[in-house]
Image (cartoon, rainbow, N blue to C red; front, top):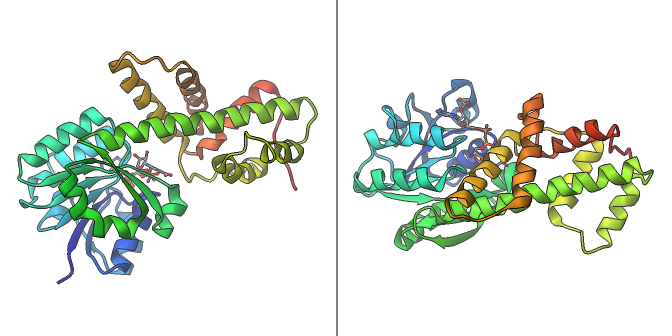
Length: 298
Ligand code: NAP
C-alpha cells in the first residue's frame, strides 16, 4: 500500500513539492491556511485537510514548509497542530528556514510523541522544487535521515546530512548569509558601473570572464536587467534568514560584520514595501539611492 504524507504549506515551494509527491504515488493530504491554494493539489488527487492535525492523522510522514519560526511552531506544536494527532513512528520533516533553537524544541516535542523529526531546509528555489532537484541540508538522527530518503529523493537531487537536531538549519543560515551577500554586492557593483557609464551587458561580460563569476549571479542577472522581480525567493524571507543568521552569530559571539550590513540593506528594501518581490529587488533600493537604473534590453 502507498505510504501516506501529510503536507503542510502550499506556498511557492510547498505546492510543487507536494505535487511531486502525488506524482510519485504517495497518498498525500494537504493543509494550507488559505484554502484557495489547495485547488491545484486537489485536482491532482490530494486530499485536503482543514487543520494540520487532520493532515497528520495516520500519516507515515508529515512534511511542513511554512514561512517562519512562528508558523512552524503553530502548524506543528499549536492547538490544531501536527503533534495533536501524530502516531508513533511517523517522521516529521520541517523544510522551512526557521530558528535552529525553535526547531530543536519542536524535535523534542515530537520525540515526546514517539515520532521522529528532521530539520530539512532546502536550497534550489521554485525551479528546484518544480523539477524535484532541491538540495536538502538535514539535521536529526542519522537513522531517521536514512528512513526518510525514499521520500526525500522524490524532492531533491542532493541530501546532505549535517549532524544532530538543528544542524541542517545552521548550515542553511550560513548558506543564505553567503547568498544574500553575493547578490547584494553584485548589485552594488553594477550600480557603480552603470552610474559611471559602463553598460550592464558590458559589465556582465567582464564579470563572466573573471573570478567574480558565480552561478547564482549568472542566474539572477537576466531578471535584474529586465527589472523582472517576480518572487522566486521573496525578499522578506531573505531578510528573515540573514536576521536568523545574525541571531545565531550573536548567541555564539561570532562577529559577522558584512552580514550585519547586508541585513540592513534588505531591511531597508523591505521597509520600502519590496518584501513580496524577489530578493534581487534589493537592487532597486540601491538604484534609488544612486539615481540610476541597471537595465538592459540586450
Ligand atoms: P510562501 O510562498 O510565502 O509560503 C508560505 C507558506 O506558509 C504559505 O503556505 C502560508 O500559508 C504558510 N503560512 C504562513 N504562516 C502560517 C501560519 N501561521 N499558519 C499556517 N500556515 C502559514 O513562502 P515560500 O517561498 O514557499 O517559503 C517557505 C519557506 O521555505 C520559508 O521558510 C522560506 O524561507 C523557505 N525557502 C524558500 C525558498 C524559495 O526560493 N522560495 C527557498 C528555500 C527555502 P497561506 O497561503 O495561508 O499564507
